Amino acid sequence: MLKVEEQQPVAFSLALIEKFNEIVSRYPEGKQKSALLPILHEVQAELGWLSVPAMDQVAAYLGLENIEVYEVASFYSMYFLSPQGKYVLEVCRTGPCCLVGAEKIMKHIEKTLGVKEKEVTPDGLFSWRGVECLAACGFGPVLQIGPEYTFYENLDEQKVDQLIQDLRNK
Amino acid sequence: MARKLLLEHINVPGIHTYDVYRQKGGYRAVEKALKMTPDEVVEEVKKSGLRGRGGAGFPTGMKWSFLAKPEGVPRYLVCNADESEPGTFKDRYLMTHIPHALIEGMIVSSFALGAKASYIYVRGEMMPQIRILERAIAEAKNAGFLGKNILGSGYDLELYVQPGGGAYICGEETALLESLEGKRGNPRIKPPFPAIAGLYGRPTVVNNVESIAATVPIINDGGEEYAKIGIGRSTGTKLISASGNLVKPGVYEIELGLPVEEFIYSDEYCGGIANGKRLKATVAGGSSVPILPANLTLKYANGEPRLMSYESLSEGGFATGTMMGSGGFIAFDEDQCIVRNTWNFARFYSHESCGQCSPCREGTGWMEKVLHRIEHGQGKLSDIDLLVDVSKKIEGNTICPLGDAAAWPVASAIRHFRDEFEWHVKEPVKSQQQNYGLANYAVPIAKAEVTI
Image (tube, rainbow over all chains, first blue to last red; front, side, top):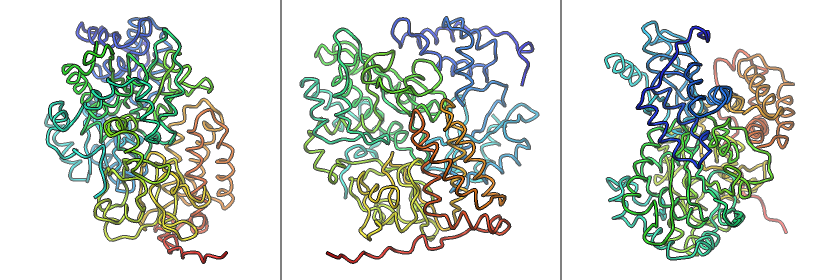
């Protein structure tokens, strides 16, 4: 975990602010706090994770206390509060996927990438973690990769190898 | 061939686009509804007998009729597309392939309720589906079915898609509303119910994706026609998500009342158990409902065949029955370990507990730890009763049903598979190397002698 004083200040691009404005327009006057979750997704898509300076900026933009942003960012599992690999492989680890081999897939990813769950590969390209049910149980094992949350279904070891190879070559 | 109301056109190329959906009769329900009064639309939904498809099974029309309508106060329709119940993936499927079915249902339902702005709260991981819905909304707006003065009726509606942040608890309707307000997903204490004070404290109806989509055939054909499908108080069709060790896992639209045996084994549906194995157990309605051994899945304790309906699946209560839930049907073959799966589900609920109520926050963590040690050969026989004890102390003692949902899978696994748990304790080494197997879980139940 990066200490807060070591985290770089951030400035949001004009395009991002315009996106924020569009999101805020979806809610009634004075209810801009509703924009918090979608805005955090936008920020994470741009920066890869949610640093304290980034969250403080969001709070300032929405007119919220900083703590209102921290408590939301730390509650929901999709928001990263520390830097991740460029590609985060999120493998479903819940019952139905385990019935069709999810545990084997996670072991294979761990071996192939050479890092434990939630660690980042030395080249900064990958990290991985088990996540709870992704609502794709009939197509398991599955994994997703943000920020677009592209889905990879009916996985086996060969498909995982191919996927990692393709991402390395990207 | 069973009737299909939601997935009839699923294989039509381009059905995700407005043009093709419209050619196939799409948006007729909006045209029809806007010529009716909102109360007439509510009446049709009541007549249909439609029950909430998200899990609770509460009659949709009745839920609508509870909505408070004070003069000059906005009211909201919020669609619950936070599909997260393990074993359930029907809403993702519908939104991916026929997004306009949901959009059309949202327009019809919003009109019935008098909502001028409605939100579809989609779980954040479904970013591709969020993009699909946004595109579909833009298309519908372009065609004049959204925005100001829809089809010259004087009715205005804006539709927005809201992403969640990854939290099972937000499938609970008041947690969802908290989340939609930009807060942590902590369920609210009820009353007041959302129908009185929901989103932003305004009267609000929260409905599941499938329930909202079902209003389209209900308006097109009339509520009475819809109610003719199905059995008893389980009217209409239901999307079933089938997963686990099946030949053909996937999403199936069934007429309620289909025999469970036919659903599992017929080629029209799941095609039997994969790899020539035998069925050991099922979870019929998503991870929260009681697990049943194969024999009680197929038949009641008296030997009568069990059907896919709200009443039939819960026949026998929790002693020998289960629940329809969200229709997440998970099949376990003879090689699966019930203890390991129960531990897996317990970990899920422990991870997803919002932490608000002590029995759930602490109890789910305890159950996970105790199950972990039984599964890994370090359990004691007394642990089994300890689990039952913890589950009872969670059940009914929490603000929202997540506590019950966490307690039931553990309690039911021990109820029906106690010998497998005991075997793990008594055979700590062997249980690490092999599975308990099918045991007598599939022994067919003989039809009871009828005595008068």
